[in-house]
Amino acid sequence: MNETQLPKDPFEYKSLSKRNPIRIAHKIQAELLEYWSALTFKRAELPIKLPSESCQESLEFDREDTAVTDEHMSLLLDCIKETNSLGEPVAEIGAFRGVTSAMLAARTERIYYIIDPYAGYGGAETDLTRQRSRTASLPNISFHRTTSGQFLRDHRDLAISFAFIDAVHDFANVWFDGSSWSQRLVPGGLIAFHDTDANEFSGARTAVTKLLRSSRGSLTLFAHIKNLTVLQRAN
Ligand SMILES: C[S@@+](CC[C@H](N)C(=O)[O-])C[C@H]1O[C@@H](n2cnc3c(N)ncnc32)[C@H](O)[C@@H]1O
Image (cartoon, rainbow, N blue to C red; front, top):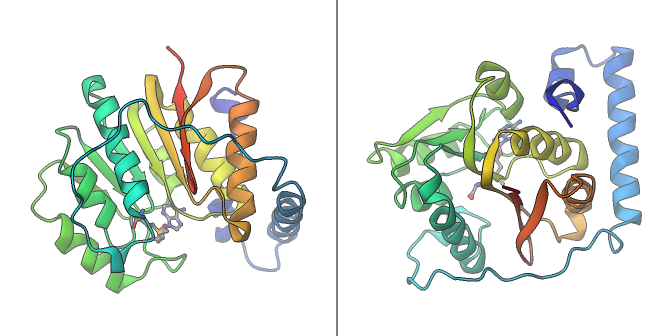
C-alpha cells in the first residue's frame, strides 16, 4: 500500500453534516464492517507469540487510570527497548490519562508524540488535565491535541520507530491507523495495537490481522499476548 492507496481517515467524514449522503454511506459501511468482523472473529485470531526478551522490572503505575494491564505494560516496555537504538520518534495514538505515555516516555530519549484530540471519542477535558500533569516533567513529550489523521497530514515526512495504536477500536479506525502509521515505520520499527482479542472490539482484531496478511511480508508478527498485538516492519 503506498501513500495514495491509504484508506480515508474516518474522522474526515465527521466534518460533513449528519444528513450528508457520503457520511451516511460511510456510517453504513462502517457498521457492516463491524458485523463482518464479529462473524470472522475466530478466523482472524493470531497465534500467541512471546517476545524473545522480556521486561523484568517491577512496574509502578496507576492502574485505575488505564486499561493497560501489567502484561501489556511489560510488552510495551519491551517494544521501547527493542526500538531504542533506531532513534526516530515514538507515537502514542490515543493517550487518555497519560499513564502509558508517562511510563514509556520516561524510558527513552526519543521524541514521544502524544496524539489525542480529547474531543469526546473516549477522552474528555478532565482526562487531558490528568495526562498533562502526569507527563509535565518529561522533556521528550510532544503533545498534539488533534486526531491521528490530521497529525499525519500535518507531518507528511515524519518517520517513526514505534507506534502504539490505542484510539477508536473499530475496524474503520484501526484499519486507517494501522495502514497509515505502519507506512511511517523505519525498517525494524514496531507498531502495537491494544484490545485485539476482545469480542466487543472484533473490528480491531480483523483490521490488524488483515494488515499483517496483506502486507506480503513487509510486516511480521513480533509479539502477541491477549489484547496486545505487535507487528514489525521488515528490514
Ligand atoms: C483507550 S483510550 C487510550 C488509553 C491510553 N493509551 C492508555 O494507555 O491508557 C483512547 C483515547 O483515544 C483518543 N482518540 C479518539 N479518537 C482519536 C483519534 N482519531 N486520534 C487520536 N486519538 C483519538 C480518545 O480521546 C481517548 O483518550
